[in-house]
Length: 346
Picture 1: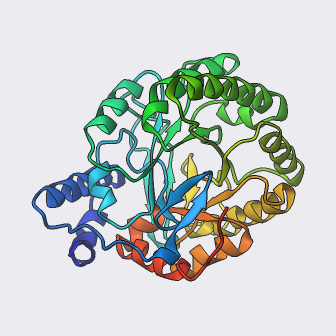
Picture 2 (picture 1 turned 90 degrees about the vertical axis):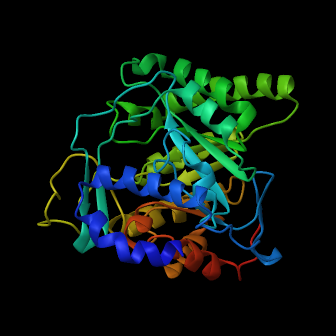
């Protein structure tokens, strides 16, 4: 039903400004769900299950962070057949993000450029939304720092968010790779990342004792890293025993979109033009990590074949975002079907 509706309304959505269409789509999905017009998906077969980070995933296809920044639409999104949902990025305090317009479609490339800038209602609002949700599946919560927090004090923001979301998350993602918060990507440098992960692992240990369970940490990295930087990050992921690495965030490169309308807009590019760059990072990480840290592949997945390509490069799970803008919910089912023949586990 939702897939059919989406195919009919997509031309109308694309007539709207991109961010307006984003919010309208989510609100409509929630309304249809409340009316019972979005049925719960059938349970996936046992062969779809994956064990990653010590967590049982009913299928390997997840929703990437960014679509539901405040955790307002978890129950509605769960009806689309995802094996896991990641919400956020959330910061300790609410912030408006960058000025609008800040999201741009590039339809000829199936791409999106965004410079949202961690716009969100703050961690306390997200926690309240998660507590209200009925969803009991695998939930990742993606955390970041406020734009006005100096980079030297970034760890304070990440630790503050970790404390708040820890009781509710299946895993927590540390976002150090958005291109839309000034200097954030400095946290991918070896000294900065070492210090940040050390602080978060210390807090994770304390929280595990007080809550009686260990919630894994994942780190989300950029596609715009050279081989030496990727290897240095891999060494730190192993050193700090990080639960997973998510590769990758959006890119500041403009490969494949030159000359298209909006291609010169500032921000992170996502969609098919990102695919090869993201997959190359996954492939190198897989070689550097040698199975010690599982990978979650994201970036440019617009078909089941694209999802398989991420697994062949070394990922164990995948996440979708921009492909959903162009393909709608049908993409989720296609990717699940494409990957359910796989038997890789971690």
